[in-house]
Image 1: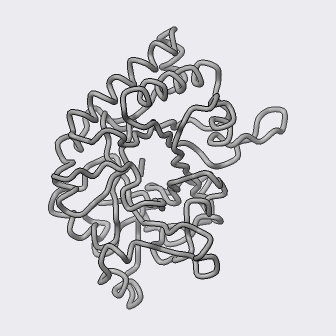
Image 2: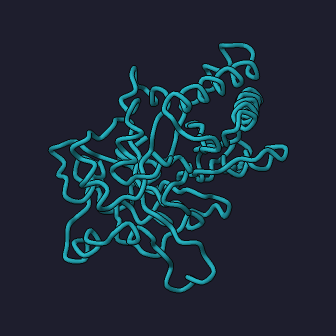
Length: 287
């Protein structure tokens, strides 16, 4: 999972706001739409020293329970209390399986149940409270294949039955099939969920609807992604994805997105998210 942001006088005033300033409401439909909150996610923990700077802009942070995609370790482990003390809410993530991995195991349902148990054990070890929403990272887009669907359903059932709540991070971009039919992964999952309760975090970094690598838009809410039932929208990734976001502005010349007040030399690139809550996973505790 994955801002160059240019500091201007407008941005300086934004950074001076308190947590209430993370509430970004549409001027035209403020009475009809829920407020939205800006957050970030990334594969690597940003470091304790950077939390103060990040919290000037972001209300919540992603939080991996297992190794992020392509990683051999997880630097987020043990950082929940530190992040909460710095004022952050959470987007709790569990890295799911690729189709090839599921297929190789032979029993998708059994694997989904096992991974759900692993996710729950990790959430409890990190002291996340019951009812925390854990988002399964479904990286591959398009229509789910039968093995992927069986794995996902078993994982969702396992998490929901353990007094936690299941979510899924998935594509909100239409993918064309051979027959010329377009399928949006989030819609495909929802339509075939069999009544399962799932919270949706969708990625759509195409411009539009994405504003690109920018924290200045005040009219964005998760349904601006084009998915009406989304509760979280990832609208920018680092690095910028050429196929989807090539026309998007404000990225650094290295194609990454960086937070305000942190230059690219520090390597602290992030993905940008909008959510309907300052704690989208409801992972904050009273400690």
